[in-house]
Length: 405
Image 1 (cartoon, rainbow, N blue to C red):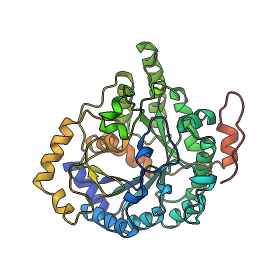
Image 2 (image 1 turned 90 degrees about the vertical axis):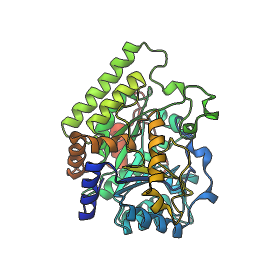
Image 3 (image 1 turned 135 degrees about the vertical axis):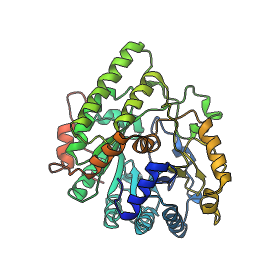
Image 4 (image 1 turned 135 degrees about the horizontal axis):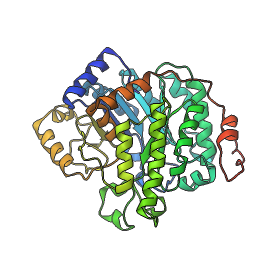
């Protein structure tokens, strides 16, 4: 995850002591997406005209480097929907920033994701050639039909697994590489979580579990800023008609298994403190009580350069691309606004925020993350056909593979 250069060691040490160093940033290169996943609504806000040019991306990368950012995650929407993703990869890596691309792994358009003449897997390979070692790919089930239903796109499971196994093969034995599965934990997949850990290991990945967050009612979107990102999907909620004791037992069985696997060295990326907080949130709906470090340890930038301390807050700060942003970021005015925003937030369970805080708030979180980052993966990753044969679950049958993309 973190590229251990002398500069980055110094920034991480300073962050651990003060929790005032922005070591992590998320930038949504686009809000456009080829999936309409049940729990996500960001695709409704995609507008290519608002996205930055390659020249502006280079300015952003240089500015983040000057601010001391160690890790940047490029997300969306779907990053590969942007024709400038490779420009961004080159710019951030060129600035010495450790980079991760958060993708759904499903080719955009006609099953091939041909963007300006570049087929999808060729674009993936080009990112790797430019030095990208870390991808996070979404997969919420080992049942292809269930996952396709979650994504609302037929064939999404097979396309995502094809991409994962391709990346697993390419990055096998590459120092510092840690491709990761992002799995949203919901009522639809709770019993699958232990198998997801084994599947991740088999294809040369780690896995990160993110508790589902949903709107409480279908009309909440008209008054809730967070509704840009989440939707009303009661079938995904864990408290959907089941008694509290039954729900709690299901959650405990899943998270006991995940924590045991992590303790035994299996590739679970989340820290133990985050997993325990996730357990509590899924059982009670309560977010972690410790507060967060939004705007200090981490921040977020929208496709058009709008800066926020996190996804949940409204845009009230100077634009990241403004020439005066760096002075503003270090000003008392910014810190005053940041403190008011952080204090008024009800909280969240987003791993990029809360798990980063866990890493710097607890010695356990820090050393667990460092240990997994530095661990050498064991065994040759499965190929696509091997992964399908071993892991695809549709009742007792294996679904027919999708056409090659």
